[in-house]
Image (cartoon, rainbow, N blue to C red; front, side):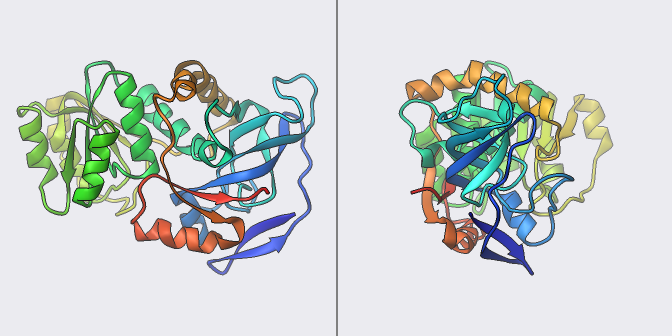
Length: 323
């Protein structure tokens, strides 16, 4: 099969043996694969695969089940699925845990379905499970037009939260508003701390979902309401920052964070079950959908990474793989 390897910081097309499933695994003929920031970090040597994971990049795929190690499973050969994987997505065939495979929602193409797993698993786990966002609360999302951002806007909206986003241009801010955000702040032209104070009548937001880190940390703390929750899911700026402990104490704030790739199979399987129960009906009805910016053939994965790093995209970047 064709596969993309990381060699000296570059993405190289090569050939590999088609993987064989072990207990609890399926082989998926990949029709499309999502491109994500962790893939870029892996290419740069900053995010190595966890033990036992494929060294091939790619954390989400959509395709057709071609082989199963076990017959006692909800999957059958020929099923069309999307799946969260620990690696291996940039290839013609990919291994996935059967419990991390979900049916492709009606209405959606393989390309669209490949844009679901990484962001939907991440947003559900962090915004709804860890931060416990509730109906009527306010969520601040940094990077509103990223894959995470466009997913968070839609999920928070259907569960009746108020959404404020930051983004880097007026065009991107308008897109977020059209998608369902209640307010959008251009962080290049506005101080998001001051803007959020005005928008919320000085009370602050209940939950912050942040991928930036660095000097955003103390500013996020300022934005939080009493009993507010900050969830850190990436550190694109810096992993280090100053902490004002008194503000945390006086506001009774909760600070948490997580990464998804290295979590165990049972943890991810539980998220998959929740998505199927609580989110899939909205995907089936068309009330929410993955936002796809552009697609590239598998052999042009390097160009997809260039676009990802340019930060000019809105939504997901997808690699088309199968015929």
